[in-house]
Image (cartoon, rainbow, N blue to C red; front, top):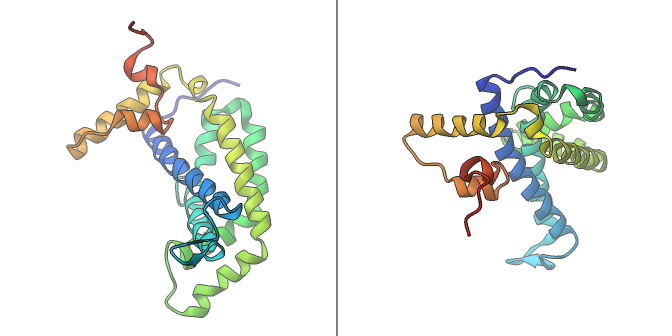
Length: 202
């Protein structure tokens, strides 16, 4: 199946997704570190159970923004980037579909935003807790797919890294700022060779 070139806007959307994905992964790591006791039984006197709930609330909100059609909608971008993996991408999206409405309501009423009426604020949390294990499994499956596709970014466009850099340059010009290239490399958003080349100096 032939590749379809991403537009400049879609490259920018993808770069925003990579930032949000890194944050989601960090929240995922923190959730598991709290869960398995790596952070101790409490932090500043707050029980790890309460901290786990807070981190999970934020992580689900981050996740919703990445997959929601009113957010970054990464599945649509993926389908264009990776036509050879369409069946895999559509399959993983189908696993999430039954939960997306609940995840979106949880984000909008409880996590990112808060309904002032307490019953309306708390109801999505209640429904979420009923499906928490299924949703957690869906998030893990999403992260597995994201990892698989990230390793193949360079295949979707021969100039992928340079096009990402163009987006960074454009943002710097627009915002009159300097975006730290080293941070982008350490965050695995940019490949080191795209900035420094492949020549090694002795």
